[in-house]
Image (cartoon, rainbow, N blue to C red):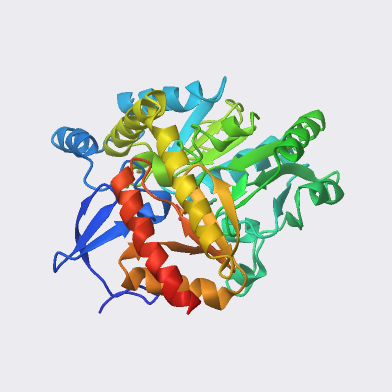
Length: 386
Ligand SMILES: *Cc1c(COP(=O)(O)O)cnc(C)c1O
């Protein structure tokens, strides 16, 4: 095998997908509660998305940002319509979106080209990406073991309240997830977040909300920021936005900080990825407006709560919002065994943090798929409890 050894993978090859159901090369069927880590938001093999991508591919896939790109402008309008007055920059991944946000913040903190304020405060247990500076922004020591020296100017707060202790005259921005995803599906308190947003605005410190995982209806609202009823200075997006086509985006009220030449991306916002993003937003808007998404969320929640009640020896709590959920176990070993056995029982779930079993199903998952997935998951829990 000619691949670098960067992932520990399950030994399976999926060859076909239909919504939240996957089939391996022998036609064996799996229920997908992961959606490729929150990416395949409109399900596998989505006909509408496939048709839009096909049609675009037959015309122009890519043309560079030297010229106007109509679907890029249209997708930007959609992202801004759920935000307020602002502008959008497109890139290709979550890490790149966060890099962009850090650059906007750093430039905002400069005066006449001289760095005045540059410090960025993030939270312990956060996850912001794998580039050198987003790794540094990630508040988990295990990510800082190699790869140094890292850029200066990052500091970590233990929780939302501790952010105030870390602020000094060099602080230009605070970057947080509203619900920490990789960290274990940990939502922050709405009142604390609203207070933070007001306080930072008051002190002219930027609030960057990393919505790479929570964005595009994952929590039931377009942005988790809508759910928390805040308007951050910068929102970053990626995972669910393209339905599997790589795309990242930064939405910000700071429309004039970056000037031509300050930042760019060769692939960012090309015809193919933005056309896909528009269709994903259209499909999910219909799901939301018809009430179907809220129904699915409620149905999923009922099942999750039921499982937690049925297996109190395995699960300590249920967490998350919308279709970004977790069951928390007491011990890491129990969590690991559940995830492994779930694969054997052909229901795909994710790990998060040290003791969370994470669920990120496609937002279009059907009740039948939810039923089937939880039937299998219940078998898993019975086996692990033995
Ligand atoms: C996945 C994730 C990232 C990194 O996204 P990539 O596309 O893998 O670079 C950043 N922030 C959060 C909150 C994420 O969940």
